[in-house]
Image (tube, rainbow, N blue to C red):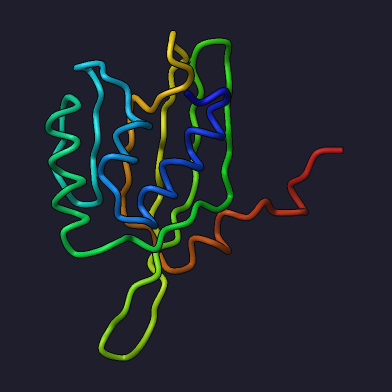
Length: 140
């Protein structure tokens, strides 16, 4: 279904933005070893439990999430994406942006690239600035 890990990742965040559990599960592997860890949550194992967790998340509506600063390590059969998720939320004081560090692991199989692991954890508000490369440390 997904020809590249980047296509699978785009679909993952699009499913969040649409609040669509069925679309979300098209991204996930059917493997019982699939793992999802939502920020501050417990480890969720297997596609049925992962689907149920996303249904609970989407019960509150879509999640306005977008990936930034993606660092990708891609091999022949697997890819790891380390990134910052920016999630826009409404608060009593207006709109705010929360940041989460995320690790997304994809595997290539007969049906293309599918997610096998998603692990997100809270990041400091300064994450966008702190994670930028320091030009003084760049090797030439």
